[in-house]
Length: 153
Image 1 (cartoon, rainbow, N blue to C red):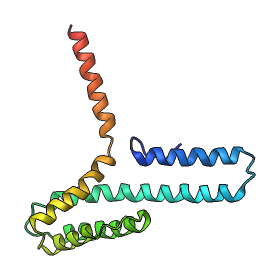
Image 2 (image 1 turned 120 degrees about the vertical axis):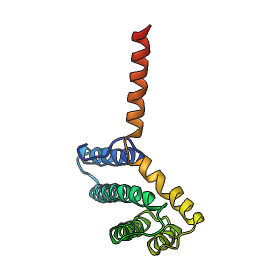
Image 3 (image 1 turned 90 degrees about the horizontal axis):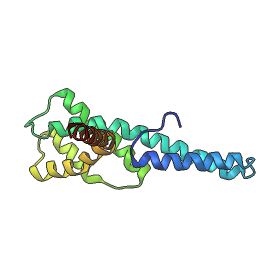
């Protein structure tokens, strides 16, 4: 599957959707409505993954802004863009998480309190971990350690 992201839950869901679509097509395309619906779902999934990939770097930037007392104009634009993407994410996912938008607005205005900072961290940090190849690098490090110790003995 070219273009599919690697190493996360979205990847597995997308691959399952793509396999189901391919199986329906292989089934001589007998049920055109099912194939059409599956193609739409797969396309929606691809858009969702693309948006998540846009959110992750902005989330990282915003997390880096949390200790700052005030934000410059470029930081404010990043916060605004994350807010826009977060709104779109809420629309396509059905998850209502308005507190993040409120805390982003407070951050942009420079009035975010410690409680809001911790809530933003709690909501944004998992996006970084799920959108990186942490699993693969951790596994590679583990294999490297094993090889090192086996050669040392």
